[in-house]
Length: 316
Image (cartoon, rainbow, N blue to C red; front, side, top):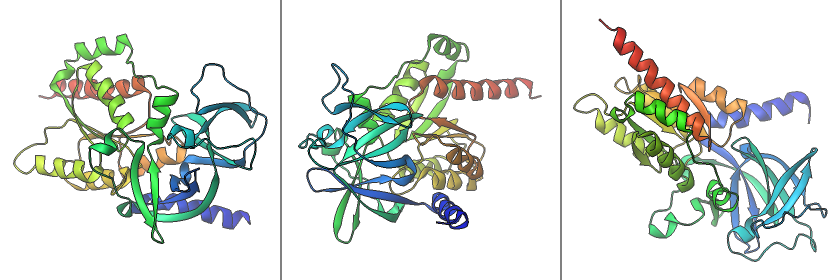
């Protein structure tokens, strides 16, 4: 592929984010079911190497570490993580999806990549019901009458590898001095693991919070809240990748409403690359914060509240 064609392809994929669309790679696990993953998370697809360094006393789904460009990364069998038959990577050809999640690189072992497909986020359905609350499924979509399941990879990583959720004591003390309990934050994320982490961070800080699992419902709440007066929410946090409506579209719609346009809004994503940060700014977000870094979440909130307090103190 020529450099011109390559850049055109990159720009085409990047522009999907501005039209509530995404491109996903579908792949197979040992149950023969199709699964999907946003291509922006994928750095490279490798044939699984046979040389794997075992990690003592690790979760059984962690097969060890493999070398990726001179760095050791985890090799996580997605089939075993889901309770399926493990992939026989030593006996047959299998593949590794090397992905970025929250500034870390992880290797996901899959049976076989399938194809690239383009979908509107409106075609991606958020399943409802108590059975899904504790599952690793975050959304579903369809292609040629086949169901594609989209996994809550963040929950898988949280359960198998573990995620830090403690806010530093100096930041919680700073929150007390700012009387942070007077403020109310609205946050939206389709991942149950991410919502739990956000709720934990907000609670440790003493910050009132309301959480939503989809951006369309969060937007409905924001628009309803300003029908008869000022918005009761002082800050908004939103994921980027979500079914029905993505975070970029959500941000654009919030900024288009004059009664909501002034509210501090931060986008919060496991896709922490520079491209996403630039798109966040273009859409009108005040900040971009990588996921699963509670101190960065706390600092962004406290800085904003401190600035607002100073502004209000200087008003005549």
